[in-house]
Image 1: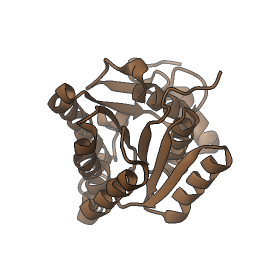
Image 2 (image 1 turned 60 degrees about the vertical axis):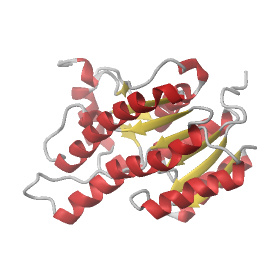
Image 3 (image 1 turned 30 degrees about the horizontal axis):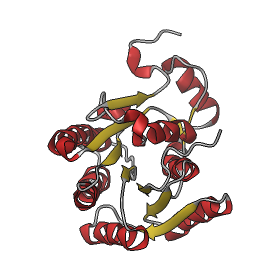
Image 4 (image 1 turned 120 degrees about the horizontal axis):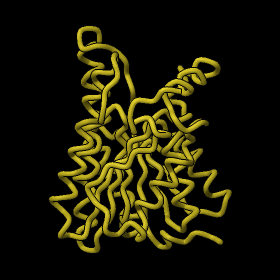
Length: 254
């Protein structure tokens, strides 16, 4: 049966050029939404939009730097100009630098927080005024390191922890505007962001740390995002959704 859970809805996805963002664009379009694919690299987001168009969906690409307020404002304005409304914002863009705080450069720290945390603030701030009249949904990608950090990921863990509480703040502040906001925390997902860990090394890591066998795919996360954006989740807001194969459940001894 064809999923039309987002029929006539308009969705913005940031970080739409690959990975979770691209998979989510396809999922939203497949559910009947018009999708704006946003990202820093124009060729990548145009590729996502073109692939959706070939599948019979409706998608539009906009080059966007989520750390820049003017760029984010242009993204939201372009969406309203083209489609006349905005129903769902998926703040998915992110980077994942490594390093302890004594090792990472200040510029790298600032870039990580600008994209991963400030970007969520800027996009939400621009989108909410267009959602308040009819309600809407904001989804944010954090990560399990936002809940429990790993060594050598100080900037990323700090930014993603901020995203989690920013999500809760948005949920509380705009609930009476019928606006919902939730956060998705993926574990290790097979995406370009995690390309440095692959092959036997990746398999060994998952074998010792992830209770459920297999590798989480971007499409798995996209299906969770699709459900949270739909009316099936209409009474859910301010919540953290973990999709990590059971890693956060407790101490795992394979």
